[in-house]
Image (cartoon, rainbow, N blue to C red):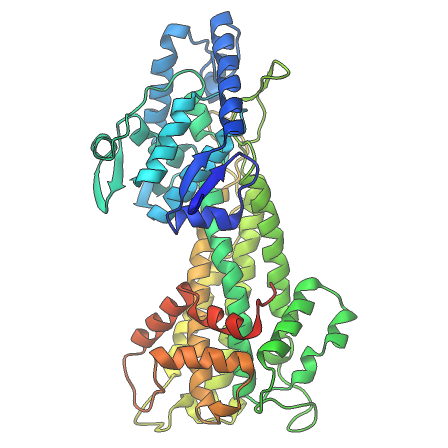
Amino acid sequence: MKNVVMIDGQSLTIDKVLEVSRFGYKVELSQEAKDKVIIARKFVDEIVDSKKVVYGITTGFGKFSDVTISKEETKDLQRNLIISHSCGIGNPFSEEIVRAIMLLRVNNMAKGHSGVQPATIDTLVQMLNKGVHPIIPEKGSLGASGDLAPLSHMVLVMIGLGEAIYEGVRMDGAKAMAKAGIPTIELTSKEGLALINGTQVMTAVGTITAYEAIQLVKLSDISAAMTVEALKGITDAFDPRLHMVRPHQGQIDTAANMLRILEDSGLTTRQGEIRVQDAYTIRCIPQIHGASKDALNYVVERINIEINAVTDNPILFPEDGVVFSGGNFHGQPMALPFDFLGIALAEVANVSERRIERLVNPQLSGLPAFLTPHGGLHSGFMIAQYAAASLVSENKVLAHPASVDSIPSSANQEDHVSMGTIAARKAKEILFNAQNVIAIELLCAAQAIDFSDATRLGKGTKAAYDVIRSSVSKIEEDRVMNVDFNKIYDIIKTNKILTKVEDVLGTLKV
């Protein structure tokens, strides 16, 4: 069906996550998934009826795993779990991220290893489809037994507590559910853990960040190509023969992108025409951008595994009649990739800022100082480079890995934690900074090109230049620069430049 993502527990992709989270697609559970959920739930009921001791089903949680819970106390146990674990702190996640969290949780439970009631999954599906978005504070997760605190805030609304956004208004969770016509539920055995024990928060944040990172690394090739033209850069450094003898895929792909973007350019040069070689930030674009692309592709591989994985605890195997209390909730498999994602994006911004410096510094560019035709009276792009340098410096702090830290919790029962949610949130902040640094480079490059001849641009750079100039004119006299920055940032967020360039050239490589 059009604008519907079918959930079966195994075929979710990053693009489908964005279709639901950003573009409002509806979700529907496949019949096969529904059947698996029913079978798993029947298995849980059999365990409870037999009074068998199974962690999280007939026992307490964490350090209280040695406390047996009676059948009569089961519902109180689940409710208490959600209330006590709702310890989120800080600003709420965006509705986009909340939708991704809910979707990933549905897909996790749809695999039939969690043991929730069909009505519980249906409640989350209805919340997605009718736009009830719980208020989930962004801080408070160790990424160890998954994202316990933030996911608990998601569940609060399902049981008629907490707060939610509905039709753009923040209100009590019970009121939001009532307005949307969704009955609240009463959790029973195993369901609390099945809903909050997992990596869906870190993975939701990381998935959306990776999606935008894919667009940004391609856009960084475009901004770099514009700088190459503005500085009459040498294209020999992008010759495919050079890169085939050091065959890192990202490096090969970036060099190919650069030649495609610069095709038919009358502004670039060859070795020896003006100079023998360019500075590293120009000559080594394939090696630097390519390394970040290789890192990003590794992260994407991890994400594609995780969004279709079972990450709660205990995990049921009804067909074998067994339950395993293991550690699939532990965020370490995603904490390291999300740290890597942040580092890779920080480097994209780092090299972009150095190219900005080459554009605005007359000793390096041969262009008017700070790209203003009236230097002295006007400062031009002087402080634009300051702003980019500030963002890059902040990224250096944010890029410190979260995953190397661990603080024991739950009376040392949970004695190694991943901090993966912090890693994902940091990567998201680094992405924002990197997008703005690339926006500044695009503006500087366009301004520098205006001191030359924009009609001689390459096929790809001309398309990018035209989009930029359709929103921001050449700076003749000083004006409030952050207005221009914000315009280009908005263009980046909506992919207008990349879309236009790919309309001309075809899809660029990542």
